[in-house]
Image 1: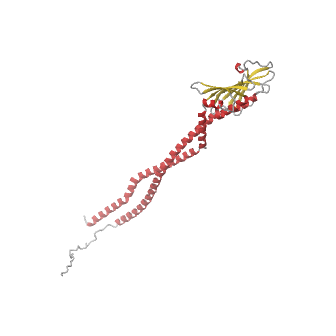
Image 2: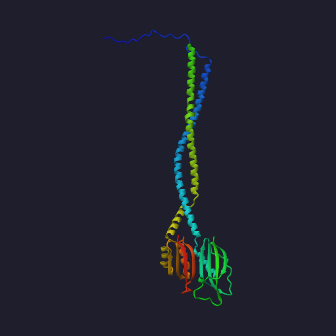
Length: 195
Length: 167
């Protein structure tokens, strides 16, 4: 059997080495390369620093976006709660104001009997509200010789503005009944103001 | 042009190209990243403003005290207002076994909230009746009230008539 052996081609046409140096750069260009190297290194360092700052800023932005979404949701909820609170507070204040403005007869009913002396008799008691003021008229039958003392006290929650005696009106007098000969009818008119 | 000159030109061009490559990130930073940064900073500022607004709102919300209790009180007031009707008043006075009331009358003009109420009762009971009535119907407004002895039994009974305004 015949063995096959591959023969490598023999290169005989070798390129000759150049006699002169191919790249001959001037001396000053060496410094240019050094400057370029230094500038590039410094630039890379600065760029790295800047990149870290930008990345941090980006992270902050992503966090801020999430926080903004959550905050907006919270603000909406709070605004609803605030509106509810305002409404509840306003209603409560209005109710309390109405309660305060309303005349409650309890204190007046406790106070009116103190106006009538033991020798006197009350015939007609009229209470009339005029805004914040309250007029109380008490038609009394009293002995002629007796004078009505000055009223100084006022019921709870009121201040006494004035107290005068007047001639009673016809409808305040008892029907078909005349006063005793020693008695007379007097109307005590008191002006009160709600505190 | 000899070989050296060509080599110098090539090296210079190489330097210029390298310089451009070095400068490119800075150009990108100034032309692309800077506007982005401005936008991001605006987002962060907006977030800060929102947080400040939220804190102010929270302060305002918490400045209202006892709101659940006030809401309950409002409901109770509302119920009281709703129950303050002419029928309610009539039911309260005439079907209450606590009071002996005679000749109880009410009248209300059409389209008016003013009701005239008149009744006869004993002196002692009048005070209790009126006090209980105003405790039950807290928003009744008293326009005027006249109390005079009952002509039939002047020593025992009182004739009271009142003008009240329903809420």
